[in-house]
Image (cartoon, rainbow, N blue to C red; front, side, top):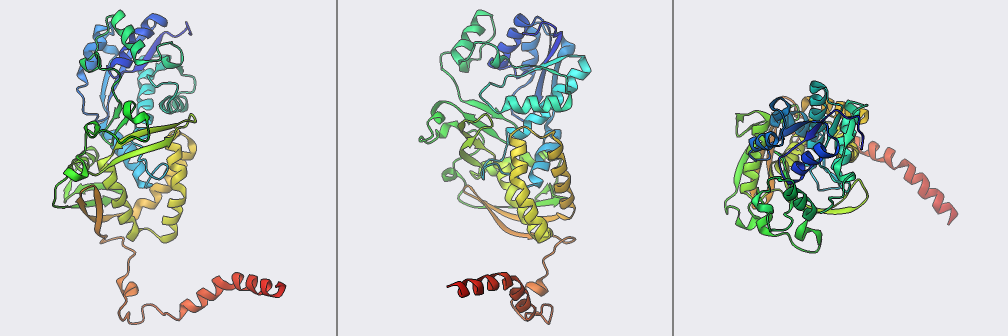
Length: 410
């Protein structure tokens, strides 16, 4: 343990783990502690974190509770969805995309308060340690990082509880005598669940576990029709009502949750090398992804769209693996954002029992769909079908040459 650390900024939720970390930092490092609690739309009362920090002797000027919901959606979630980002074919990266913002704010506060270190509660088994620390080093190369889970011997829920009781750390009732709860991470984009029954990938998740969505079976028997407007690739209005970014996502979450949309049971490949099962609820994102692709389908050039699809898995891996602040992610983002200048218009959707159904799309200013050319009726000479013969023969030339050579050698 480094004795030259004078002040550390702790990413602090006020829950059991980070409360233990706060006390442990005070004992192990004997440095001044600054707490940072981020409101990313997790739906919890965050002011309790202030009271707990004060109880630990943290001075009021060293307690930061920041509402980051609009910044989170506007500057992180929506830019990610401009790329139609999906990791390993399914995961919408709800946890991953929150980490670069937390890292950014940790460094902002470190600079503001003169802290020489940051600390986080990510375990040595998980991806979040990588995401927090890569982000921190990218933004402040000489920052010191304290990762208690890589230093202490409190490697079980029972040991954490014992430490908490020994040191007078308040324990929420849900922890007392109930064993380990699900490990839950939540923000405006999603809620994730790990642990307990989910550690056996053969078992179905408990229905009572889900928080944001009804089961598709319990969803309304009548579909709901929704209109989503896009401006330069970002959703700006739901059913004709323009809203701030965070309210757009919140409304899509409400609609998706009501109709049983957005549940995912996934075994993913973690950055540290292990396979891990997680369950995710992403109702708004599960609506937004196909809607965005729908408006792109009529406003993007074919080859640009294909290029985006080729780049997307790399972009998704960069986010998943913690490289949001890397030069390559920034370069990809610049390209992606350039493609979105014409992605403007309206998408019509039908939500029904876990399904998002595209029923139409339109763009008054940027559509590349030309009905005069695409029609199966008389096109009045808009498209000369004879042109296709030369196109086909040119593209077949190399295969014809190869076939003739093969015939000669037979």
